[in-house]
Length: 216
Image (cartoon, rainbow, N blue to C red; front, side, top):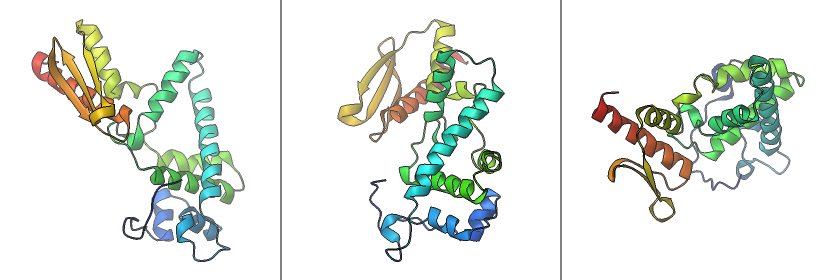
């Protein structure tokens, strides 16, 4: 919530009607949708409400909906490790990029605020809100597609082929993560804002090079 926002770097937002078309939901109370897109620094007057309250609500609603979806969709997922692996995987899949893109926090804030707005507008209906969310966030991260994460894919491939890799952590100094095979650099990723994204970039690079070397 502390992102620095000015008129020069604020993205052009679609009209409220366009937003409704994008998310596939028509608001009964249009003011809720307007509130979801109003940052505290861009309020027209002191009485106008910014998106913080809806964001807070939407974050909680999203967590509940995902927990409910996973609980009923995967009844055999009773291992604490499996649940933790899924939750970590979801965190590493911003914008469905399999960990290769770190999305701006303000984008996540707005999505959560919109979810909160839908939840309030539907009369606090989890089921109706989920119908909007599941379409908005497709494709959802599931245990079946979690293996597409670059780190997971690289580690599984190396384990099958008996390949040992060494990781060199230069992230604090340069934002780089390097991956070596037999002292030879085969993968490198850079992202100074988030170490996990740098690691995923390095893993994706290493995997591509392994494919070239071994024809995987």
